[in-house]
Image (cartoon, rainbow, N blue to C red; front, side):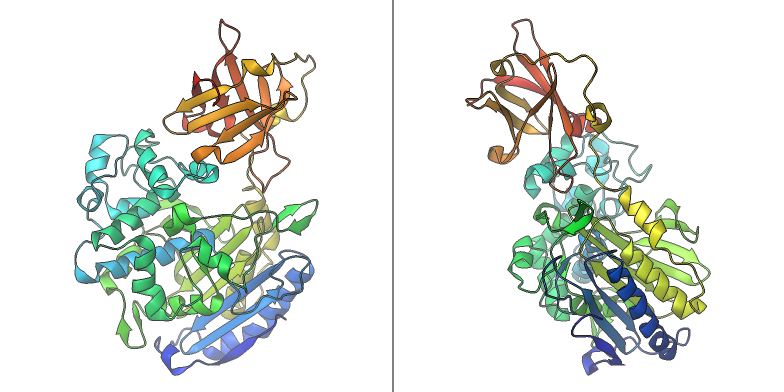
Length: 511
């Protein structure tokens, strides 16, 4: 059991705002807690995750606990105050903030982005003029899934990423489909804050974190780094959890930049279960919150129960035998996993934060708790199913299979000067290839060439580089097209070929 365990007990007076619920008694939750703790301790013992923290809210009951360690190989334990990066679990929190921003009636979910952020553009004129806050927070704008994420990895800031979305051809007709877009979601939230004259981070603090007393919660990566009691990110490398990577999420803060503790998160959970009311105060309009929980797109089926899953406004939604379920997961492939699940008809919610990827521990813990409370604990252990799902999300190079082994016939490269130069396209920006005195090529990408990687020769004009620190052994391919003069006229970066922006034209010599 983790340090600083808080047993299920009477909440303080300022937490008694949800009321009583008949469907799930406090006794059933009390009975589930010891069994849940035993299950979590077994997961920690089995090395499913270095550490995790749990928050459970029901009626006037609040349970908080931490398990495992903040960093593998270090002695500090996770407790209720430990701050985690929660990745896309930020989305329902941001949805709550956007709903709160509607309190003064300046805008609503159907307000067009062109009215509140005239500078924002999509590839086509009609979506640019008509895309709404709702369209962006429900991932129905036409933007391809995960577009902009590669620019975040290269180090570009939020303004640059959002400005370059206008270059991206839509993946489907406007409102005619669903593709999960962190950058689109970010624009919707940022524009909503701008509508009332606030920067996004200021809006989060003013409308939610401050009023709820969430003193350890922030949308700023620098605040996370400043916390003494924080959980480090971990990835599985050399068959063990290692804290290899740091991950700055500021550019997409509304979509994935929240850092928080389970103590703070329980306050937000209480607000959500209270339909926007806490401590006798209404912080967000009830109709705006209700709209965020309306199903707008069918996005698949739950892998355990098989129920259809829908997406609303920053929420995944399930309708099953236990009534409505509001949920959202978070995953940073750099080393974080999180999940919050609400049963509003039963009057309880559970959140699990962990410090590793890939792991299905958050889902398995939630499944175990729900099974204990609602079905007596006879259901299967789901950890292996969820582990498999998240293992499939480990970043892969689009061309790793092509570079996994050397071809039978190898051709040597041209001289280093054939490849040295400055390359450019409007989306990726400028890439510079230089050569050291010993002939080793180096690739510099991102603002001011801040992302630098050595190139390793593969075959003739093909090279590889190791782009992502969370998968340090995964090669990404880069190839050069050689012109009639015997020097490269363009380069192609496989990492972004699928987005249509992998080709960069040579524009000059290296500086």
